[in-house]
Length: 234
View 1 (cartoon, rainbow, N blue to C red):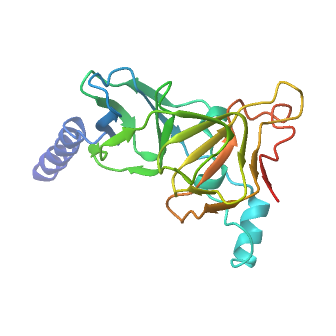
View 2 (view 1 turned 135 degrees about the vertical axis):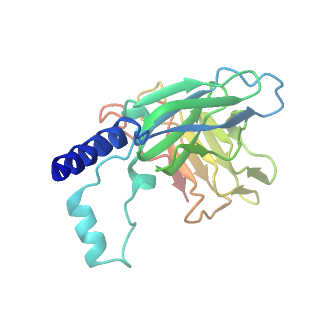
């Protein structure tokens, strides 16, 4: 009789432990995103994307020849315009946001607002109940075109929309800071994209954490990316 009682008590203990175990492998991602020189920070879209698969052949080449070429990663291969988010929300007036009941996983966070570009956080590993992001400040986009008449700097974190050919003439220097995003619009004449034509000096040195991103201002399909040569240096 004593052995039966002990077994019954042990089973009951296990069942109660399972019943009151609150570990769900889900958490909350929260943070704040603001808009440059704005008092109302509502309506900023916060999207979560799962990490994309990398080309195994390229990964193998990178491993065999680590000092040659570019090491592919989420940073080199991911563009949110080619994927659908797993989770999404928008900010409140003060810029705060919260994404709840998010399964533990590795994510890419995209903060985006029309007129203010987008900002990527490539490596968010959710493994705790609450994950708070550092504040992100989105800078207003700037449209650029024509011939530069003086030395010019394109700032880190800002998106520059090339709406017609931009020329850097002789004796003029264009400096592009790490983290700047240069988005080229399509040329309606059918000659691919508008271009950055450098006849003077171009200084554009990124780093491993802040790349200078030259990209399209439209989608990224094969048809849309024809004539992708966007920087013309003489």
